[in-house]
Length: 108
Length: 114
Image 1 (cartoon, rainbow over the protein chains, first blue to last red):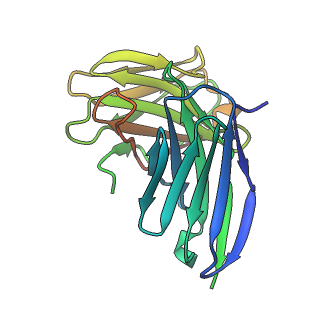
Image 2: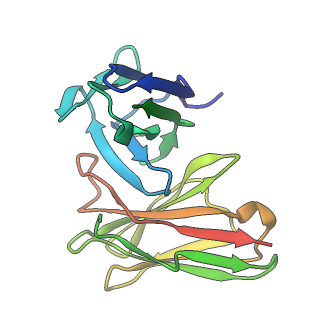
């Protein structure tokens, strides 16, 4: 069993739609990261959370520590949001565990 | 541009060979992380260095080793290469080791073992 599970694996949305990607984890964590990977391969860290909620532009990330669950929301989705979104957790022992990613395609 | 540089961008080599991947962290960052991304296993954490010292070890094979030099650049050495070592290798850097510090990823080195 993976320490980090993401859903859905693939997601296709129309431009302007509200998108939610979910992440559940089974280990104790000191932080949770949401990463974005574009087709070229580069990785960008979108959020780092240890509690509550963070917002950056059209992106919102939430975490519920008790339920071991995080969500990444994209409001008013745009084709440039098309990418793979990866959830990663950092354990108190400085180990990192990654989800398998959610491939998002936003159609104009 | 994250400010993290990795060389080379691409590397093609044969089984049994040894290669060295290089990473220069963002200016001022003391901590370097190495990750492997393969098609079958996804992203995996390999190892972390802070100011020249090893801080955490993940799924790094015994055939792999890393170090961080006094100028803070880091090298990942992969030896006795196997076909399964073909992957994207990313390095990331952060200011220090605390969990509140963001990681900035380099563009990656794509290794192909033939």
